[in-house]
Length: 225
Image (cartoon, rainbow, N blue to C red):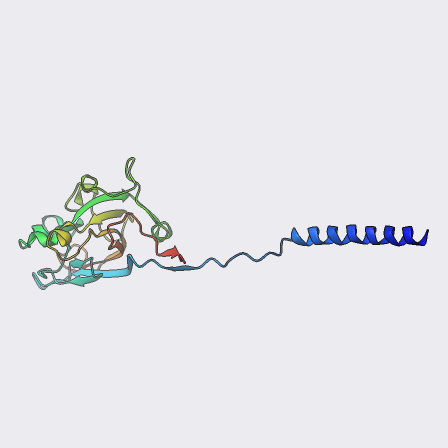
């Protein structure tokens, strides 16, 4: 009788031990691998590139070198585009292909299309990919204009903050880059220290480029092992 009782106790204890092991195995305390993000090596961000139309003809800081994220004088050979005003009247400013001003070589041709007519700065900062009709990649036919005037003009203060996608076409054509460089650009602000006069207009732009020819503007990407 004692032997049977001992066996019964041992059996019960074994069942309890198995139940504890199963419950422990289903615990939510299991540690998952840490997710790590790194800077996207193919993307460069330029938070503020400023330009100004001053009184020094042909030497105003109105050029943009978008590959390097810097401003230039109006006659610089390394600029991609310039800020110009319609009819030289000090109003209605727009970005113009650098190739068409002062007859720059084809190595500095830029092409544009508009992504959005009025995007918030937060939306711009989190923009990861440009949506084109039915395609994940950016194509030459997407870039329809050599400037931004087709979609309106910039004045002070800005009435909207549009976003444009650009292609530094000439950079690859001239062998300055091995791959196509695509980018997104948005005006940050505009001021005019002498309203009604030809000179005194200032603007700044935020820019992000992909140097690998990809439709990918993520600042951070998941680290791969």
